Amino acid sequence: MLNKILTLCMLVFGLTSQAQRAPDFSNLHDWAAHPWKKDLADSVHATFKEEQRDSSVDVFFIHPTSYTHNLRTKVWNGNLDDEELNAATDKGSILNQASVFNAQARVFAPRYRQAHLKAFFLSKNPKSKEALDFAYADVKAAFEFYLKHYNNGRPIIIATHSQGTHHGVRLMQEFFDGKPLQKQLVCAYLVGWTVMKNDFKNIALGTSPEQTGCYVTWRSFKHGHVDKFSKAAGENVITCSNPISWDTSTTLTPRSQHIGAMKANLEAFLPQLAEVEVNGTYGLLWVKLTDHEMGNNHRLKNYHVGDYNLFYADVRKNVAQRIKAFQRK
Image (cartoon, rainbow, N blue to C red; front, side):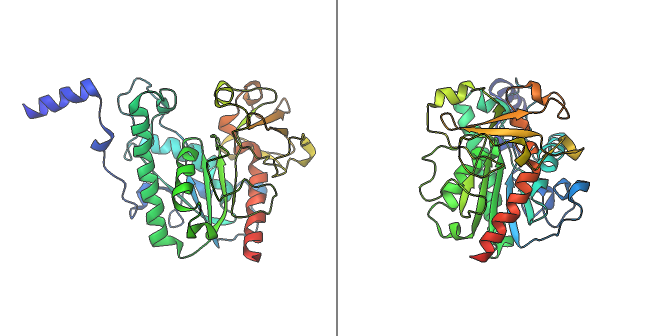
């Protein structure tokens, strides 16, 4: 009888996130990327095969939302043992985004009970905040485990995208901003989500390619497009970096300065594909793409999925620049 009552409650009110098992970060299964396992963050396109390798720095990468199917689901947080979901994470962000950093650092990317995509579209629903808080608790636990067992005083890069950036800003506030750990911060790449001007008190927005102890951030859109969310946020409140020049100038950066993009799944390297311009009013990165190679992406107005792919080689080079600058200090 009790089981029937519990089942009925689940059907009526939805499954709770707390019913799922918590992550065990001593188990490599609960890391999407880890230096002690072979994973898709280790993937290297032929263009970069001859790069000199270095692993004196650690990257803590927080992946974006891959829990997107079934918008009617009553389960607001993903399950760590959902191997289909894990595969979507690995073949998506770990391959296309976390791999950017593998030439210069050890990459740690925890699995976490991520909030469903609908949490960002139903933000007025109290369950949305609960789901995001629940997801962040896993990210925080992973970072604390990393600090205790793996860091050993090594320099740190925080790298994130989308939902990962939502959690990454909070992680930076709690562990780095004005804290002793800030001295170990090489840079934070907080990509694909809004970072507001008042989010940090002691961590500056980077304005040069070799600046350290700072953060950089961008959200990519077709040139001239302003999304509804940015308009609603207001003017001059969202920060944005140029991932080619690594400053915040609103001057157009020509295609000739773009090192190159990476096609999805590391299928092809595409040099000098884009020219970009920071829209300082709404904190957007406006992108002009050549009308080829990137499939249908150039027909979209929102290049969110390609935030890293579009500037893959530029980020890869910049990571090396900032690490060298940090090591010279």
